[in-house]
Image 1 (cartoon, rainbow, N blue to C red):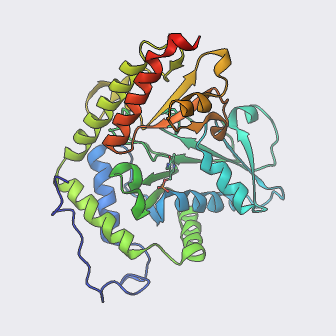
Image 2 (spheres, rainbow, N blue to C red; image 1 turned 120 degrees about the vertical axis):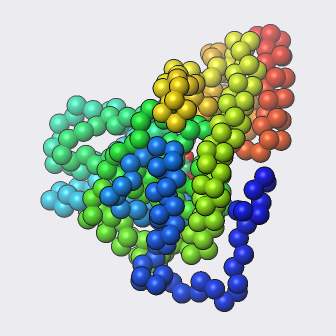
Length: 348
Ligand code: PMP
């Protein structure tokens, strides 16, 4: 709202009609160059000499990445096993199961595949860092020649997490949704080291949607340009906002014996050049009491809607609450949590 004019977009009705750009690609080179600049400003990813693929949100990019990596080892006849450590972002599982491709089988928790010697099967591990739902900077659990890793870096921005060092993985996925918050524009990107993987992901985009909306690319361009014009302004603003929300939430639950929050140790942040607390996008709430096994129901009775732990491969004494909704939503959430905590003794 403070930068309404510089971030505004006006497009004539006749403009940007064709599928491709003048260089015959589906991706705007100007937008790509802004993405390099944003990563260089924040220092959250190495992007020099890397390929960049755009998609309709990181949702499409993640699926393109899985397809591209599943083609890498073609000697195996069995489907590629897809794993992620619990608690994991639900979409990895639900997307694969919905599309029901013969290429993939979702195999759940990455830990259960650690140290299992089944040399022939291909494995894709999704590593979400910071993690949705618990905000932790996850690391890969599996390794070896048949394991390919997709790093979902949606939340690797200084408003959610300390940035210990620029990420430099083979395949990293980012999204505008969690950078500026424009989830509805559906724009995400991958940063890729390997040219073959890049080409396969481009082919996937051609087959899947014949490219990426130029309108979305133009909108992303305008937004990232406005971000860069403000230096570190948007990150300082977003960090202050998230930090205040987290502190308010932690204070609200500090007297509770019934509900507890995830606890993540502070880390050095190269963006702020200091040791910093986490300020995550979600609260990964635990219901501590034996009788509160269905934590979702406990919160629902208090008019708080979360997401059940089992959706993340976890137990139902956990619930995820979103801290990235509007200010009003957040304030109402805090009010209802305060009421729930103040009534605690009466529920024993
Ligand atoms: N990855 C993670 C870890 C997410 O939390 C989300 C959104 N909740 C996405 C990917 C997908 O985001 P989008 O498609 O809007 O980029």
